[in-house]
Amino acid sequence: HGSSGLLPSLHSYICFLMEMLLQEFMEWLKPQSYSDSSLRNHHDDTQQFLQWYAATTETGDLAKVNRSLMEQYRDQLLDFMQPSSVCRHLSSLKLFLNCAEGKNWIHVNPLHLVKFPEIPPKPPELLSTKEVEDLLEAPSDDHYLGLRDRAMLELLYSSGLKVHELLNLDTSDLFLDLGFLKVRGRRERMVPVTTMAIEVLQKYLKQGRQDRLRYDADLCLFPNRDGERMTRIGFWFMIKKHAKRAGIQSRINARIIRHSFAAHLLENGLDLTDLAQLFGYVSLDATLQYAHINRPDYVEVYRRCHPGIVGVVN
Image (cartoon, rainbow, N blue to C red; front, side):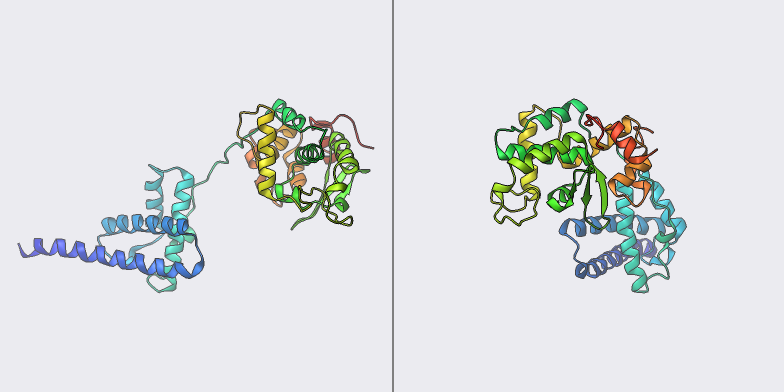
């Protein structure tokens, strides 16, 4: 009778210790500028683990945390969670065990030795070639904004640029006589441009750009109505407006156009290695999201494969 009366007391004591560890961990995280959402995730993930650990080991001491135990926990999570969710969960625990190691609750963080689940890349959302064509035709040439918007959309699809790369372009980055433009950033690179994009850009530069600048010497390629460099939000609204005008029902944003650019090139024979070079990727792994699509002079293949090419730039 005496020993059975100790069991609830022991259980309560273990729960108390687990809660104290959790609170110490949350205090440890606070100075590290995590968002409220991240802090909530780290709290819930760690709390779930500590409850499992207490029930599995019947102790409030972290001394039994080792590689084998963490692999067991990982495998149990995979029984009811997606690999991506398990990875996020284990990332929270890696932080917790880093904290535990720093506070000498454990000797070493065993999660450094545990293999996280592999996350198969999701196929990216894409527009069909017809949807892209309709989008590019949506802006009207009768107004300077239409000329600018058409030039931006053509260039986005022509060269697979990211939004910030497109918005940061200056006229000095254009080498249209060579069929290239310079993309500035951490990894500066030269990317080819389709003949159609070159024609549209040249028309925009002659008829739609200069009158919108605040200062004649301003190099900004795509100013907004106020003569300032267009913002990401302004560009997002522009895409939505023309997608609606084109009758496109699919979800659309600049990233989806970039994915579509990549997919359409790959479908026509561009190699993943060439795509990595075109996008400025350091690692070929970054192109794995397109591996479900398929199959070498890089520029020559680009010009042969891009559905927007109407001729070869000399």
